[in-house]
Amino acid sequence: MSWDDEFDLIRSYVKRRMRELERELESAFNFMYTFPLGAPPYGPSLDEPLHEIYLTDKECVVIIDVPLLDQTSITVEAEEGKLRIEGRTRRTIKANEIGYRLMEREISRYYKELSIPVECNVSEMSYSFRNGRIVIRMPKIEKT
View 1 (cartoon, rainbow, N blue to C red):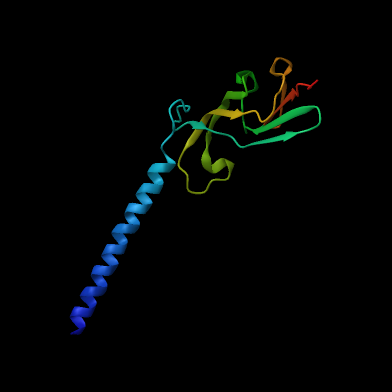
View 2: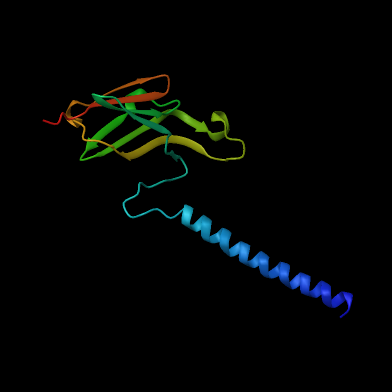
């Protein structure tokens, strides 16, 4: 076996592994960008904000980070264990303004839909907005 034969074997092995890796990456990225039916229509100007949920003895509290949100555009809806929050920003936000380095995108709307973890009385839900955060409070339904 000559050196050329050994290099040909190595080349063919590397090419085969590269094709396999390419297929795996393509599969992973296709999975990431496939949304189930009924998922919100994500677009180039829409962002899903970060959130936290915590429970106290008497209430469920949801905190959602929405920088530069226009307070007059907030919509908070709750029904049957689901919570939906929408809003528009005061101006278009470039991704690099809020900490992203290599993302070329602008945000002008926020949308978040999440499940409420416990039985909450959504008819008594209240929310406040301050410093780019929405704080939603829902009292727990007392079990008798």
